[in-house]
Image (cartoon, rainbow, N blue to C red):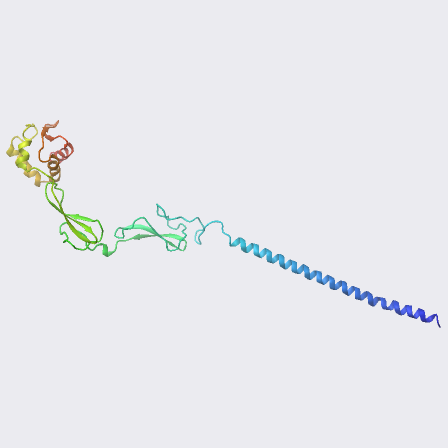
Length: 260
């Protein structure tokens, strides 16, 4: 009976060992679960890092682009940018002219691209225009600063009325004639060299002079008289026609017009 009790105690003790082993297994499982959780956290961290890198790259452009073309910006400089080319400043206007009373082509920056437009002079630009056949009065309004208007000023030997647009109003300017000899005084000198191609006498010269002053070649004849001045010295040219030294061009123009 005494021997049986120790054996029973040993048996009970061994029966209790599996229970202790189960506790250790549970602890191991718990540890493994914790490790898995740590790995999951690491995976989440890596994913976040990848997303951040992608976002940074998409917001870091390396060159100016536009939504429409994606090309390099074309600035407004000496030449008008091509229509449809990229621009940078919304609403910017590019034009080579600044006189709104003159037709010209310009460009505006709209939605990232240059759009061409044509400036058409408005109705206000037509107000105050000068009609030489019906000249304005002094002080009448005008539109284009510096514009001029005149009656027929082709005769340099006669007075001429002109108007200049100054500070928004027409100002009258009187153009004085050049010092030109009248026909009688001029012809007294023309016949001196007795050119074969010139007038034969003073009377014929005066008649031809008066006709030239009012004829189709009056502008060329006035240029000739204005160049000759008040004390001309006549000689004969190669064609034996009267000529004043230093006035070869206006004399040639008159002869080409009157004797083609």
